[in-house]
Length: 67
Image 1: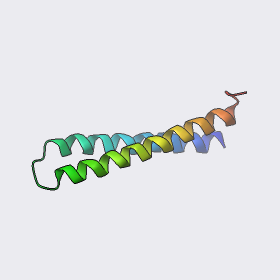
Image 2 (image 1 turned 180 degrees about the horizontal axis):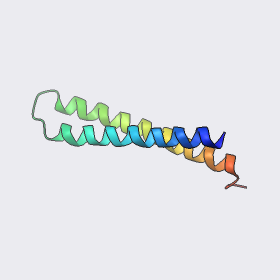
Image 3 (image 1 turned 60 degrees about the vertical axis):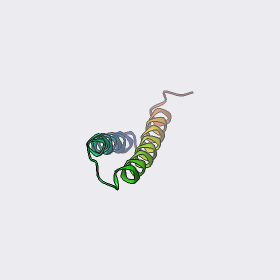
């Protein structure tokens, strides 16, 4: 179970990195949809961060880091 949670956590971190890079590239754009896209990317980043934190907490419970 711990291995599955660890893999899920690393996948969530990779997705988070991709969303962050997409957000940075979006800041350089100057089209009309830039603000809307930036808002969507920010919401996606917050969601992926919440999933990553939940996986990290679950992993901590499984391996016994929390009593």
